[in-house]
Image (cartoon, rainbow, N blue to C red; front, top):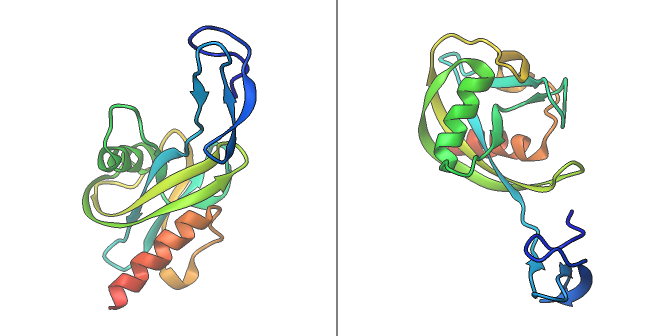
Length: 164
């Protein structure tokens, strides 16, 4: 959180702007708009119908199961970030099949994260990456506890679309 203006270094003051309390520079007028962090998640199924999950090796959710996912870098599209994170966390390469949905996730660490979930067709050899402790396919009716509600919704929505 900013305490000083990143442009003129003046101490920021709290003011109500557009119905919200925001930090504002009293000298140059800069307003600190806080936005959710964009991320992308990959929903991958194998030929047996198993859903790919990773056991996270980093916070938030370290040691718990989630979809392969991560933050979108400044020079990436959401699709490129999804495929990059899939490869980094599982060793698999992939191709986007379709957009599943866009979800908002409250976070103690990041306040609010915007998750863009994609169905991905993947290929290669499964191998946990640098920030994953494990990577494994689970039958849809035997999924472990998944740490992020947005990932649970992505899985639910993808499976619901398959049944139609």
